[in-house]
Length: 313
Image (tube, rainbow, N blue to C red; front, side, top):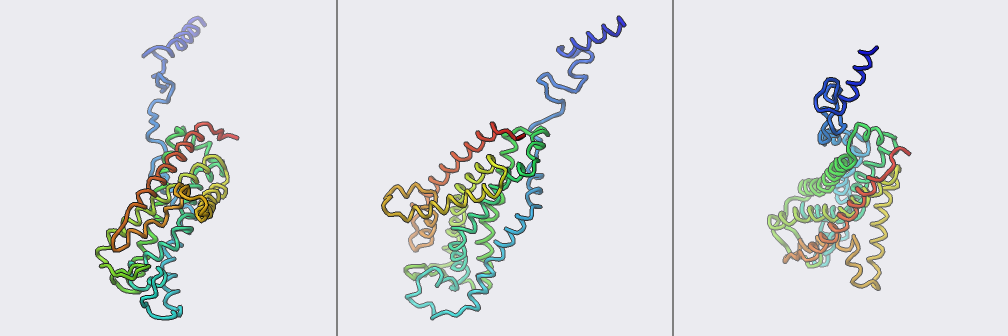
């Protein structure tokens, strides 16, 4: 009994020592209390999260819709009856959609950027955390243990990756579909009817896609902020889409004057200036500044909110 008591004393005091028998090393615990071999940087690898999100049904459905839309538009133009040829008075972007692949891609982007792409981005960024909370799996992810900031960062990176893929795949597929259906022709500019060589417009079109992607950062950040504060993915997605609708309505109010320039959707169509004979990137620069500022602030609030969130209740 005396020996046993001594051993017990040695075990207890050894827990505070550096290398005594029965100390933290013997129990597989580091001096800071963490398990030996545990590395926070190895928890929830990006590859795992990418596969998890890719297997979601909503991912398959959304990408299927985005890839099918250009072909649906091609069919609509093929079977539709036009009132006349592309004369000098046909200066709307919809009238020039069948002029060539780039014109068709610009049309497809113009009709989808204001709503369909907004829904896609809001879905990927608003569903990522809220769905885990709704399934009651968020608490188990954090019990892995995955640091909260790392979990949020990994999910945000993957969500933005899928959002970027969604924004890029639609105009690229539209360019392919339009070229196969209407040929690779020079670009006619809406509003003036001037013609620009297709090879000159192609680099600008890449800039346009990048700008549309940046302009969607506001939607992504707001959806992500709402996602970390609710267990309802529909609420997070709907809230982000609602912001776009309200902002679009407000920018039509001329009484607001220059204040409209600070609305997150005011500069969304500034990319049309990049396809003009003399491109003007001034509006796009302002749009990037507004989008990045809003996105940075909303993302910071999302991380702050998640650090304090009770994931058990």
